[in-house]
Length: 446
Image (cartoon, rainbow, N blue to C red; front, side, top):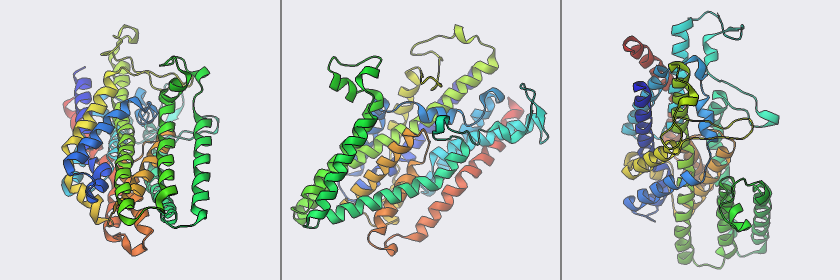
């Protein structure tokens, strides 16, 4: 139990560090464009980090918890992974490198699990409880096919999104920027396109909402408000609100003078940064929830405690992540603690990384800020829906690059970008190696 408590404490410390390490992701553009002061920006971002508690489920947490097979590891594995993740996060923060806290945590978890498998079984095959021969590398869930043709999961999918997440951000922000640029012209074509986008958005979101008849516990007597505030529906309503707000601006953009357009864009940046902060909180806090859930599962497996005898409610350990039938449960203290920690970390800021994100990649105006943050938020909502833990750092960096490309290729400072990509590529292997080393050291004393 002592090690479990230590893991929970360190995981929340990591979540706090993640908050100030990744604070720059949400606030860099609003600070760079002087829409908010640094203090106002971190308060704004922290508020929406915490608000994500009421918006998102536990899909990403489930994916992270299943990075390694919990029946085959011990608590020292998870402890080593969390310590390695904290060390790498602090180092990259100190150097001002916007690396991925998400990939640091997953790399550390996987690396410590592999070290454990090698320590216990060596490099040769061994016979498992199922009677089949297994090898050390199988302790990590590398790839798992999706159910009924759905999205596959596993560490390889997470690694693939090191490339795909920023590319999605680049593509989305580039398209949004082109859309806004054309909307500023006084002709009918862009307005027809904008109306089509609005109709398509309403149709898509409406078709994905959970209907009132399928809501188990409606929150209101009104059918409309019960549907809107159903947890699975809030995210889709936010997507609709973001796209429709940008659409309305596009419809009136050509009638505004330069001063009016800039003032409107700065107000829209408050919306886009809030949307991105919401996605950041929902995506990154869930990863720590997944680590805590995995630690609880390992504790139950290795301690011999009767699960039925465990306390329930606020301080219980009755963690049940999404099952095949769609049911899930997590004691409220876990998500509340995780969202509180990341919000507190965001309030602490991360000014070195703000400088890199807000000015070194490309010069950012209110126009670019709206496009980048909107694209980043939509990408995070999309990947969270697919239960894929992606890097908010990679996503917003790609989005900033995308808006830079609308000006010209040379507007992006590729020297800085290449350095960031190297940090992204090295994060998982370095944190995995560091976690493996820490595991062997801890094993001597535990």
